[in-house]
Amino acid sequence: MLLSLYRIIKFSFQDIARNVWLSLATITILLLALFSINTLLTVRMISDSATTAVKEKIDISLYLKSETPEADILALKDRISGMERVREVVYVSKQSALESFREKYKNNQAVLSALKELGRNPLSPSLTIIPASFEESALLINELRVLDSPIIESRDFTDNTSILGKIGAITKRINEAGLFMISIFILTSLLVVYNAIRVAIYTHRQEIEIMRLVGASNFFIYMPYVFSAFIYSLLSVLIIIALFYPFLTLLQPYLEVFFTGYNVNIVSYFLSNFWAIFGLQFLAILAINILASLAAVRKYARV
Amino acid sequence: MINISHATKVYHNKVKVLNDVSLEIEAGEFVSVVGQSGAGKTTLVKVLIGEERLDQGSVVVGGWDITRLHRREVPFLRRQIGVIFQDFKLLPKKTLWENVAFALEVCGSQPEKIRKIVPSVLKIVGLEGKEDRYPHEVSGGEKQRAAIARALVHQPKILLADEPTGNLDAINANEIIDLLLRINKFGTTVILVTHNKEIVNHLSRRVVTMDHGKVISDQEKGRYLL
Image (cartoon, rainbow over all chains, first blue to last red; front, side, top):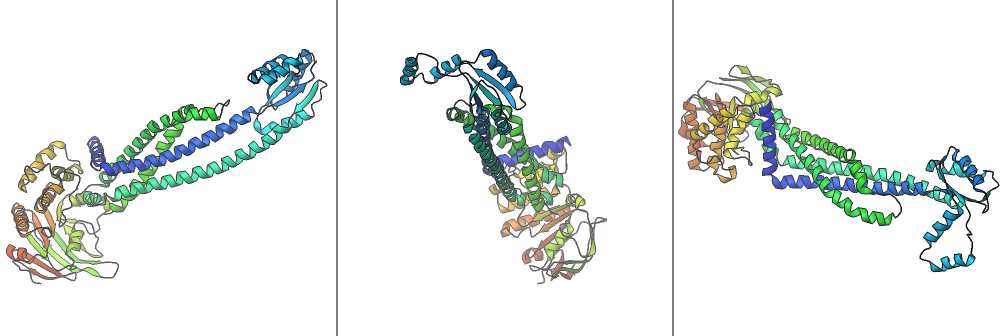
């Protein structure tokens, strides 16, 4: 058995090396298929991260009356924190609001001069409410609309409501279109791979015929091609990993600029999901390779 | 050694490529099977190596009824019957040594046995010193010699030669026939399928003539009739 295994591996490597151009062409097709799938995965990951980041940035502000004692504000904060659909409530005091304002307009002398001219802090304290989940934001807004408290000066919901609606619709469309696109891409790639392997084995049809004429058992006829399929799959996945990480590293700075203030890290996404992404790709490409090899060899190995 | 009884093979277009063929070949015989294209010679070879199945009749080789051979048994049959073809059927990406060794490797032969047998059969066919060449690096005659060497590695009792000289010039063709005669002298039954009139007449051995799927003549020291 060990001798047979050794010979199968030897025949397979001999075949790959002595048909080097065919082997390279086959691996290139596998690489193109894998690159397409990974590129689509990257696009989907970016769109997912972007929508998640935007969703996380959704907050609702309650502006409070300027002279409200801090104890009343903290009491209201606790009351809101206790609500089911609230993840966090952040109290922004008059002083912190002023500091944020100054930081935001530090390069705008006109605004800063106007503030100085005013001679006092014109900003109100506020409570920033972060919803527990994006999907329940609308319900939370409804609850906050009817929240009764004498210290509330104004409620800033209007823009959020329309943004929430738009993001919800965009996310839904991206998910639907993305799923459709990925399915089409994967199907196309797998068909291309399937046919590439069949063509590669078609060029070996005479060899297969000779193998059976000299009395090779099916095991000896099929297994070198199955092993070659394994080698092609392994090599193509290893090469795509070697190519894709530098590509992602190059892409990352552009993403950081584009998504300033949001946590979108494509490299760490691929690293943390390494086995799920590349392990599954290897198994899928291996399965399709073996399937194509068996089907093609079977055609020419008929007794 | 070989007993073919009422062998009939019909293809889908209702043409009888073998029509009630009965033939008995003794061990150690040298038989030429002749006939024009479409006479059924190659089909007969295919039946003998288990590539085609008969619709009627039976074939017994060395006491083994191969008429209804199971697919799994075909490789074992092919290890016992050496076959050579007009187009040599060598693996183009393997050297002559590897081509010959391949027939042993696929049967699970031990490396020591392979190292012993392959050089000896290459010597018998006169290919010493050319073991490391690829098929495209040698002449047609040498390719056919390599194919004969491969057919001999299992020390078969029967050697089927299907138009072995068809792609060779007269000199190489005669050398191959001489080689087949030498192999026959060692006791191997040789069945030579050919339509080369000169070779058959020169051999002066048993000649079975086929036409339209039938055996029309079987002469002990025959000549090419058609």
